[in-house]
Image (cartoon, rainbow, N blue to C red; front, side):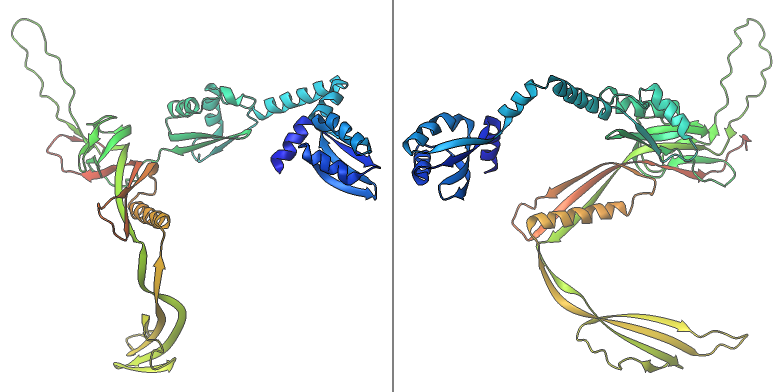
Length: 419
């Protein structure tokens, strides 16, 4: 019905007042000729209002003569009549086009820029770095490169470890993460070692001798930044003659290695859900009891002496009375809560089981993720057992970007220890 009305509006239609003659014959002849009439309304005994498409007006005149009816045009609706009126009002058309173009251009410009996640780095510095990459108020969105702005912020501001640019309408959001130095209040020489396996993505050395570089794959326990700095290599004297007595070579310098090493780390998890789950769960009914234990004997003060449930789960909280000086009263206050358990049976569709298994697998991974880890990718695959069974199994894979450096003190073998 909607498409029919839409087509009638595009073609154009008129509202006709049909009067006199045989109205029923007029309607029957129109329908038999395939002329579409709608919104037929009786005005009087020999008058009706009817809507008809513009293309059917000419054949409708012949039908009116045969039915001895006269009709009069009441309203003209549709796209052809709108265009006809607009041709006579060119200034209105030009204004509407100008308004539409202006509205499009204004909605394609950046009017608001918001910076999130910064604490030590000022918003002015971030906006200045973004402006050099083409992001500023009044910039056209189609000329804006989000990747270029993100790279410019990271390159120009060393304190920023991660940056992302989001465009929401006329507003641009810049979200950053600052580099946080590891807390280390210890003293003495130490290496910075890998706390887990990964692929090094970013590296900032504050003190020590770096033994790896960006793009290297490292194993757990591998030294990333060594606290042992080797002595500088001395050049040989090319002079001819009796060699002078050489001064003793200085030994290595030992420091406490410091730095930030961010690496791509991969985790995997497993989850399974049965299509039909059975077991017991709490019904919501609870029975509580308060007891006093005196010299190994319990006295029920409040609550039932016997648990009123066939199946239940109990939780007990025991507290000893306060001590006064050297007197320890042998009295213990015990609170027991008994939760009723009922049997349940839950059937899952395959789609529901996949969602639950996916959440279970990812939840198991998130328990092992550090708080500052940035999740780069999540991927879940269904495990096919090769035979029909009532269990849905999935494996989840998560890739993160995180700081894997860990301090490992060591005892130097001679040399110079630096603060």
